[in-house]
Length: 50
Image (cartoon, rainbow, N blue to C red):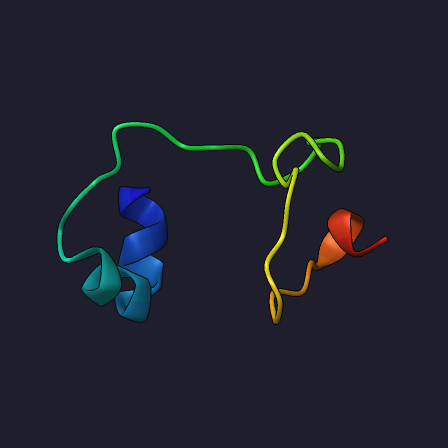
């Protein structure tokens, strides 16, 4: 993460020097496992848009 933030100063500013204790996967998560419900005006992207 430090290397990525060194290459992406905008990300580094948004992180404000804080490192998350862990990371969640953004791929390979089946639909409905993460998003069991939705709210009006929230649109899914990627695999969950299917």
